[in-house]
Length: 169
Image (tube, rainbow, N blue to C red; front, top):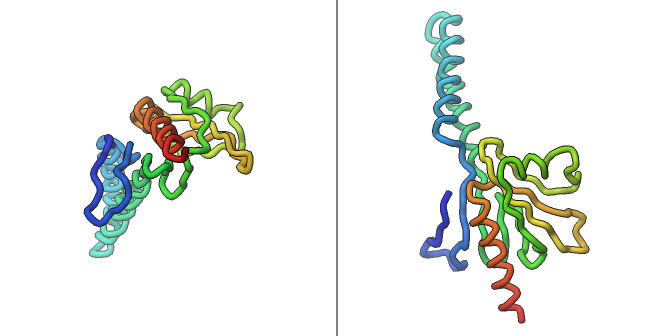
């Protein structure tokens, strides 16, 4: 969730210029787990005997797994690339980066959004960045990615692009 410069001892890559995990806030986890427990209790009350306890063994782990899956996406800027989950964007194709607040994100993702845009949007995160691309071989005009720190992420992408351009010369 915050900037990270640590790498594992066996990791030969350069430290990340920016790293964040798009996990759910604690209150959303609490509400979802409570909802799962209530749902399992409803089943338990309707099924007599030991079979009623099976609901707790199934519903609660499914809810926990779903919550983990929703918060698994990682965003990073490292080694000349912008990484979002398993998608990779070489920063040499970045024309510009715009930090977006809630209203800006809503505008970019509204009716006028380009259908070929790459979007990783998490509704529980207000901020985002729009990365405008300059790659004639790629029909994707831009990426929109949720982030809790849009200004820091935008600066990191532009700094990585400038550093990559400087080392390529």
